[in-house]
Amino acid sequence: MDLPAVLRAHRILAIVRSASPDGAVAAALALAEAGIPLIEVSLSGSEALGVTSRVRAELGPDAPLGAGTVLSAQDARAAHRAGADLIVGPAVSDAIPTARELGLAVLAGAMTPTEIIQA
Image (cartoon, rainbow, N blue to C red; front, side, top):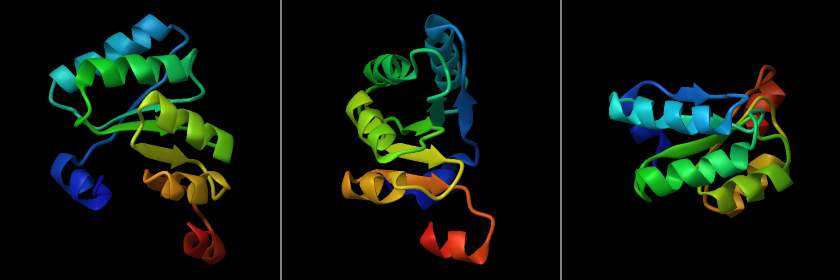
């Protein structure tokens, strides 16, 4: 995924987080149908990896789909297996190099100059 190009084209990244897996899938599909195709499923939601897999199956392989609240290399690998092609993390972590090795785009939160360079 060419993340800068995707962000320029769509200009919004919708975050889906729900206690209801079915509700999360429905929300993601409604967002895509409404013209917001760049969607992130937060791993802090209920059964988030299953939600990611279901959304990927519904939207197809070409739709940009992210996993959010990715905190570790294990999270990055699980998100990749579930069909995410983008990870979003709140901070610099070992998820970043793992995601890059897997060919995933990365958005990482950073506050200090050191974190920005690491990200």
